[in-house]
Image (tube, rainbow, N blue to C red; front, side):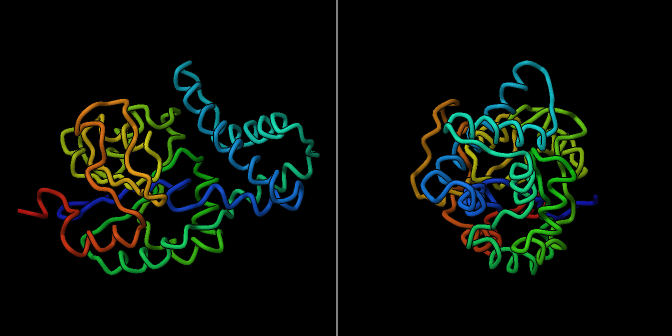
Length: 250
């Protein structure tokens, strides 16, 4: 990928473009509304926790496997039962998560920016992410906007391991010395901190407007370069020239 003179915007998928909470709609068919919300939250909690634990143990399982395992963990913790056919249906539904309401108009706006190169950057498998980008009713109409789908499968580590962000840089034609030319866009604080730790720029999508609270890394190195409350503000920042590479600013 030739990114000379262009700005790379690397979009996290789950929790940034796609709402992992939207799976509660499918869960409601099995457990009712109140239980569905609890299972959705627990499912996401263990999905992330499993990736961090595997990183710590220097082990790897595909994100699809982790997603299935964390579903069963969430079901057991909530003292519910799920048949194998129902579990398979929920896993299929995970490929069709809803986007956040601000995503579609922002992507339309960004598509007009000729010096912006949007890519997907995800913990998911190539198959999972490809299904979501190309077949999700909400996201698929904008699939051509993304110039690449970059996942962790090849290096078999998960965010926020440094190698994941170096893999992103390699995939978009940037050296480690040029990694500061890449902007991560994520709604996940652990992702923001991981990107900043290797020198990337980072935009945190704070849809809840709760403010930055992550205190793992003190000072500016542990904070996002920009905070937006929706992707519409990101598009405005791009249009206003607030997000660009050093070469594009010179």
